[in-house]
Image 1 (cartoon, one colour):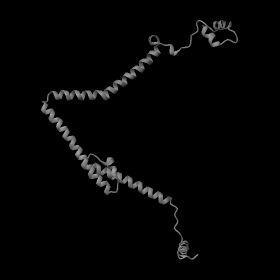
Image 2: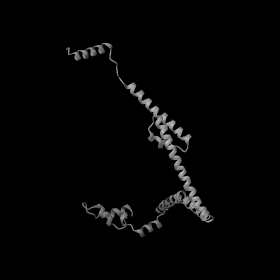
Image 3: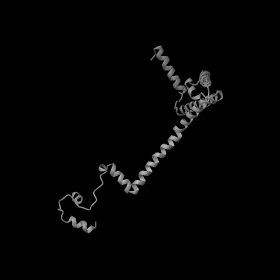
Image 4: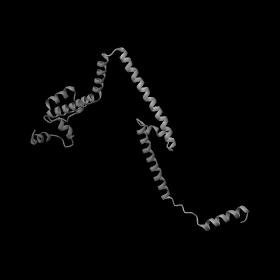
Length: 199
């Protein structure tokens, strides 16, 4: 619509009339888009007719599918492959072999737990002997004796360094001044006089 055509249609509107209503009633003018009124069929039509909307929708859809596929590849697929490989290997084994493998796995787990319990007991004593809190065992316990010893030494260095810094800071911030000899003598004399009942 041309400007002159619009002005022609607006000339008959009263001065005190609502301009928004008047404009909406003029034929040929686009009505404002109401998002709440669009239905599934309208949405499909917009996708078919508007290339920009269709491209955006396709991009968002592809992105979501790509993330889903990546998650499946990283998390789910390896588990499925592992389970299927176990099934394939287990088909070739006799029930006795399967039972033996299960017992072996249980034995290894028990042996690992026993080793951990022994190391926990041993290194809890070491922590106590070094003057460290026994609760630190959960932080220092490693796979073997060497790793655990290194962890204890590291924790000990950290704690001792923190204590040393704390003591240094406390001593440097302290403003204690020892009493002078005359103050001590006067205070001592006052206490003796008080004890003897002398004023």
